[in-house]
Length: 289
Image 1 (cartoon, rainbow, N blue to C red):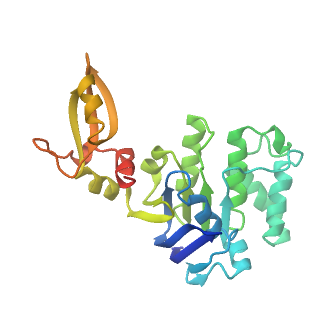
Image 2: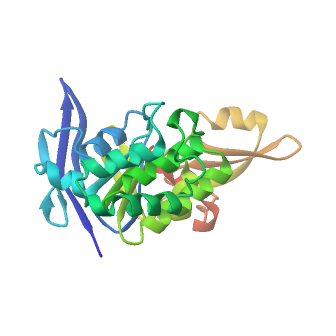
Image 3: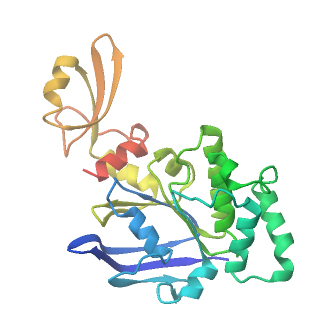
């Protein structure tokens, strides 16, 4: 099933501070990444989309149904995995999934087979009957995404999905999300650019509560590549150069020489880098300038 999320003119204030201003975007099935520095408003936006915060202005439509005014629709159609996902340490993973199943008010007769299927799908068999307090970080993440998909929600929101996971666990978790994105909308917030490069179809960059980029990762790179240059410098030249241009990458190449990438509208005697010479991390820094 194809799904659509439309966010219109979202504003959120705390006291006299504007946390989010004029947030507008539209997305369908797939994995959508929210990027932004600390304090950009990512977590606030995710809390709004999951129904945890009320907005002062704006609408969120999921498949043309107003999300923020329909609590039951949120419970039935939105799954959420916060960054600091935690459960009472003495509760078993199975009992926790059972509790979430009951909250979703799903068919009682199907409960055991439904939970068993999720346990198998996310490879939780080994620990599912043990207290959550004994779970590793990777196991707890798996339990978190398992509870988020109970009830087959159309929108799943995941805050920092691969934080605190080792490389093997990150790869495994990315595969879970990519698979889910085939028929759901998955919105993730992350600081790990590699996550975005590998499996995100859309990128939204926030800065000080406003969207400064909305498009594909490839397009973010294409735009940035027109303004990113590369130059070889000595260490003494580098000290002067950094006060004139914003340097976004440094790499020692030989003896006392450093190759730098830097941002400029134009630079005499140099052509901007081709798309192949600009990484998504370079592009992210450019868009944040």
